[in-house]
Amino acid sequence: MIKAKPIVKATTLDKTITASTDSLTKACNDAVTAITKKTAEAIKLMAEVKRHTKTKAILTRRSKTAAAKLKKDPNAANKKAVTDVAKEIKLTSSALDKARTNKAIVSTELAALRAASKRLNAYTKAITAADKVLNKPAKRRRMKKVAK
Image (cartoon, rainbow, N blue to C red):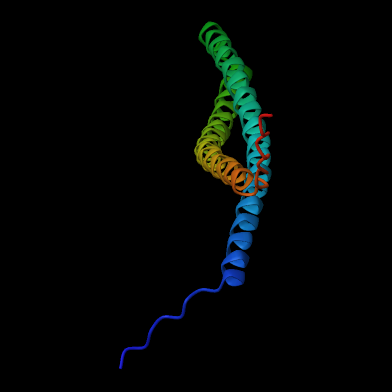
């Protein structure tokens, strides 16, 4: 004997719809929070990349001048200056590469969050518009005036 599926009651269906809209609203709020945090992190990483790039450019120029001094006057002080600048460039380059990879990861995550947030907002607006249409009060009809 095949057991028939029970038919959903109106109150259960109403609770399900309410829970769904509440979870959609909560997801919208969570998305906004995540986007603001990731945006702040992306801005911080952008500033870090800019700072490291600037430092690397300065160190590169310093390296060229130190190499020129070493070529002109090969002594221990000039040799030490060249090696120190080379060490600093190496450290700055590794920090720059790390910051760039972190920035790339954060920017892809931020793009995905923005796309999801856009979808969530569109769904929420559509549901709000549908609720507005469905919950309109019924129009009352006027009686026609009888011509005398």
